[in-house]
Length: 424
Image (tube, rainbow, N blue to C red; front, side, top):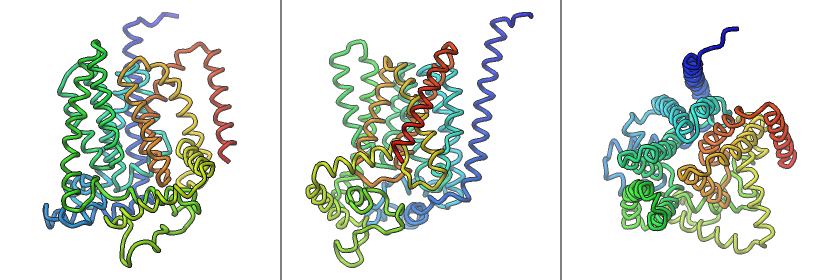
């Protein structure tokens, strides 16, 4: 048998890799297009984002004087206003953004680890059953996932190239992501402080620290004026309302902090406030936050610990209440991701950017445990980092001898079985 020359082997590997990425991209578009007509997650788009976008187009910046403008983060409806303010068009744009997200995740994995990891990342992103119901909707999930991934991908490129422009673009992406879903706002100061410490104590990382400072100070500069404006106009020192109901419902004993929709009941806030108050009104948001603190104070610490443990397990391993696919499928996929991601993260812990991605993943997990549980929050917070690290883990495992691959597969199967049994 004539051996294949090394040059041909590299060309074949290159062609095969990009064939897989192209196939993954094609399948993603087809799958999301199919889901777009059946996704049950268009409610917020129909209730808030599209109507608010239409109001902004009709009223201009005067709309921000209306307290309703702070019910949702501003870029969630400004983007819709800039792109047509029509539900079907938003879904089509979301599919395009998701395709770009697949390519960014693949590129990140290539830079952080290897070309093989990039191919695995594209395949995992296209095949996961967790993302399509949300990325096919007209809501903010496609936009937020795109901006969140762009922030990380641009940071990875900036660290790789030592170029300021990439960090500037990363800061803009992060600022817009925080103005789309406000959870990341609280992580920005953490990175700024960490970058200052790195610049002061680690001379070998001064360039990276400077880039991180540039990106996150710029992101803060985009977010801060919105917070100040909301404080002056509406007495709200935040990007939007919603924290009150999230904390109140997230500690409700009757639903164990889960979205009431899982139990076919409505939000329990009717006995609070005045007639006609809505849970996103500024006054109601403030009252719900106060009541949430009183509820937490009334619980025994063992009960609170159990409540958080149940929500944390559901956040990681998927609750038994999900309906978008068989729970076993969703849970098996998530446990597989976690197992591969642990292997992948261990392989790149020496990369400062990998540590940053791990840090924001841990932050989002911790930040979501006390608030209202819904699968879409878990998917949006965890899926991109898990796909990235799982792809690296998969690429790393594929280079092992067959004995280690067999042992690893056995351990992963045991983890899936154990996690499924524990979560029953």
